[in-house]
Length: 279
Ligand SMILES: Nc1ncnc2c1ncn2[C@@H]1O[C@H](COP(=O)(O)OP(=O)(O)O)[C@@H](O)[C@H]1O
Ligand SMILES: [Mg+2]
Image 1 (cartoon, helix red, strand yellow):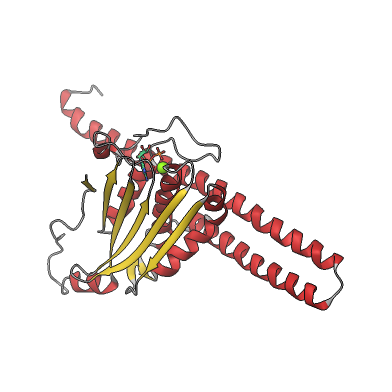
Image 2 (image 1 turned 60 degrees about the vertical axis):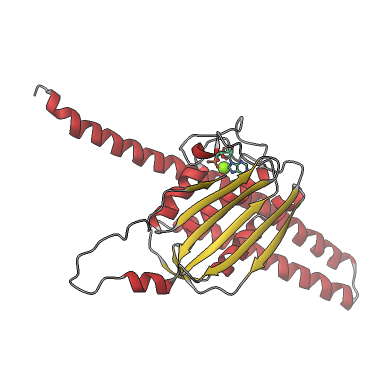
């Protein structure tokens, strides 16, 4: 059958859909690659702790030393289990289902995954966790967003530094705010509007731990936050640092928004936010 000009519309749309799908796949593969790299190193670190305390316990026969060794081994094994559970959760998760989630616990579990990496790059982490209500999110997806933001923050401070992580309840909007602030290089004003674009990167390529340089991290974060009816905001000053704020809906907010049975379904304006860029 001959093609006519009329076919251009649907064909182009199909191509756009296909490319979007491929982009989503590329984002996932990149995230998975970075996750494997991070968690394998962290896991090795835990194994070293276990091996060293096991050796110590075998060398020293006294009960006190052995007790201490067992305690250390037990704690390290608990960390190892947390690491593998997270990886399994993320690898298994194919659905985009959301549920009431304790973000404080989720943040803590995510930080467990980066303990060694942050130590290695001499990055200290300040945590300010205020009491927050449960958020209505897909925990695995939010964890991936956090990993992206935390790794970007680490890469913005190649000589080490400080990272501040804050959780609070924005009572006015009934959202949970997660702020990840670094005191690193910052983002120049001309680049700031482009950082959420797919493939926009200022990095020469992946670093020695195989992370970054694809320009897919923040575009994935934006996509995930948009499907959560949340917002992602950035504030940055060159030479001072960068803060990303995630705003995620609480369970009560989602319940309020649910239309009564039979009512037409509409999306409230301004809820699905494009990323906001503040200078
Ligand atoms: N915390 C940050 N500090 C400074 N620049 C950042 C930060 N986060 C992101 N950027 C900038 O945004 C760009 C895009 O980030 P991202 O999408 O994660 O891709 P990638 O990390 O692969 O470069 C980065 O290359 C960097 O220029
Ligand atoms: Mg990145």
